[in-house]
Structure formats: C-alpha cells, structure tokens
Image (tube, rainbow, N blue to C red; front, side):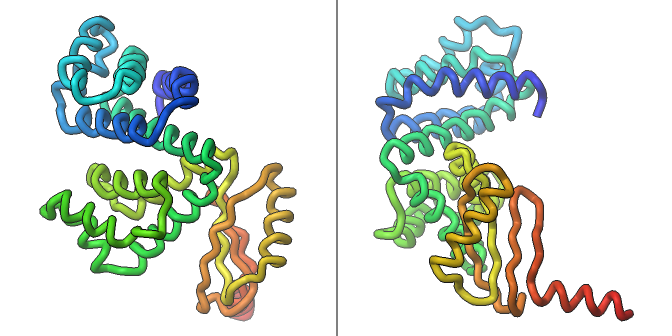
Length: 267
C-alpha cells in the first residue's frame, strides 16, 4: 500500500468515527453501494481519484450520482473520502469497502455483537469452503444477483446477526472477481482488527473443551500481548496435538507434523 493511500485511510477513519455514534447498518450499506458504483464506472472512478481535480468537481459528481439515493451522512462521508489523496482509483474503491466493513464492525461493537459477527463470518466461510456446489453458485458471474442473495438469505436465516448478514451479502455481490471465501476471510480479519484482536486459527484432531480453550486463549494472549479470537477447526488428519496459525506464523505441534519430522530425520 502506497504511503499516500495509507495516510488517507487513517484520515478517513478519523472522519468516519464521529459519524458512527448514530450510524446504523443502512449507513454502512450505503458506503458499500457507493464504492460498488465507483468500482463499476471507470469515468466516475477517474474523476473522484484524480488528485488534480478540484474538490468542488468531485463533490458535484457525487451529488449528481448519489444525492437522491443515499443519506446525507453517507454523502458527507463519501465527499470527505474523495477529497483525500489516493494513489490509484482502485485504492479509492478498496477504501470504500474497507471503511464500510469498519462501520459494520463499529455498529456490531456498539451492539455488543462483534464476537458474534466474527464467528458467523467464519462459520459461513467454512460452509462455502466445504461445498463445491455452493462455491460455484455464489461465484457464478452469470447468475443473477437476486438469485444469489436469495440463496444467501436461505442459508443464514436464523444463523447470522444483521451485521454479519450485511457483510456476507456484500462478500457475495461485491467480490470484484475475488473468491467469495477470500472476501469473507478478509472481512473477518477487518472485524477482528477493529476489536484490536488477532485471529488464531486452531486446528485439532478432536473438539476442545471450554477449559482447554480458555487455557489456550490465556497462553496466546500472554505470548502476543493482547487477546486473540480463536477459530477452531477439527481435522482428524492431524492425528493429535494442536496446530495454531496467527498472522501468518504457524505453531505446529500436531502429531502428524512430529511423525513427518521424525521420518525426515531417519531418512
């Protein structure tokens, strides 16, 4: 990420935070929608990300396209966002998406649901990863968006909070040629980042007890200096022991790994 984009993201969050005290999920969905429209129009993207364009011209373009379709607060924030300097038009598109996720995370935190949202995103990702037909149905670019949203609604009915549902729907309809599973993973990490927690993916051969999870969470928190969100996957193939992945670092204490290492040493 270029320095100008990184600095603009920091400034954008500072502009967004005061709006979040009274924001609802409709606001976040409007930010998603504006970003999607900018992504789909090279002309609009060029105008809004041009560092040499006057703020008045950018504001006018936003008003012309979105003035009658979004709330005043969403338009106000979008105007503040495009007035910042972005390295590329795609960086601006990415910023709209990241900040919409940030808004959903903030709303979830205000409603004391952020842990639920993390878990629900992870659960839906696992469902997608384990079902090739579902992967195809959600990733099919020829399928109608309404049909995909209807499928999502049937899958998450009674299983996801309103906040998680917004993110799951957007992961499907706004993937921008990315795999739905990857977008869900990215959204999950962003939600966890809002909660100032790292995500630890824990793989075990059999389910862990609550006491074991509590002990592991304490050990990892001590090691990393902050609490971690534990996503636990059961994989009999590791035979026994435990494998933990945190921010790209893998701590592999599985029996399968130890047997492999022993074989290598004997070879």
